[in-house]
Length: 212
Ligand SMILES: N[C@@H](CCC(=O)N[C@@H](CS)C(=O)NCC(=O)O)C(=O)O
Image (cartoon, rainbow, N blue to C red; front, side, top):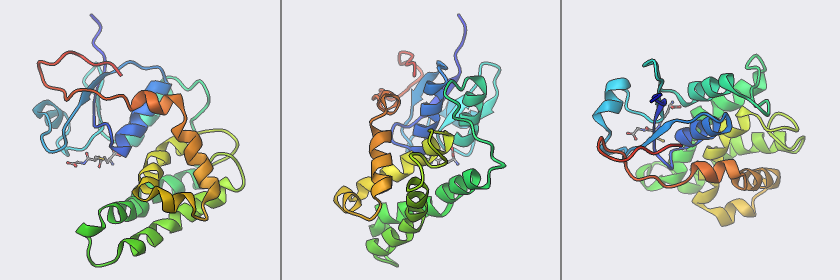
């Protein structure tokens, strides 16, 4: 029996969502191991001591434990709709960097504002809006973030915008970010997205194999 790559994942984690989307899009089968973040499997920590998901372990033992690297790996294998972008393109890289950097920080502070009492929830939301404005500007010019077709940049950023929007969806829906709302709505409607959001039982050494 050919052993599949193993993906340690957590359903709601935005990093894991983007990795699962890329793997599924590329048509690569992996064994999905759903973890509980508060009680990570020893085998996952043995492969990647930093203890974050997603972690992908290839059949030859190679470990890829950064979601952006998992996306690149998947797209190098198969990229039927040309999602790959040239990261010499400043905009592509800057958007992802800002998303994973300051925006992710503001998102966490907005979402869990009670844990960050230095400022109000509204302040954290306003800080996050700086990035949303940038996305809105891009999307006022074309349907997707870099142009008229979807790329890995859309996939990489979407799960984070989704989280931000759903902290207070009524606010987001009536905000000035109407192109962003349309983009988010389109992304949420992708079959690819719903297909990677299926619920899997927690993985344990004796559980049945689950395939993504
Ligand atoms: N830079 C990493 C970040 C991954 C990450 O931070 N994942 C979170 C879950 S969304 C995590 O595993 N946190 C560890 C924990 O909560 O114990 C990547 O892109 O893969």
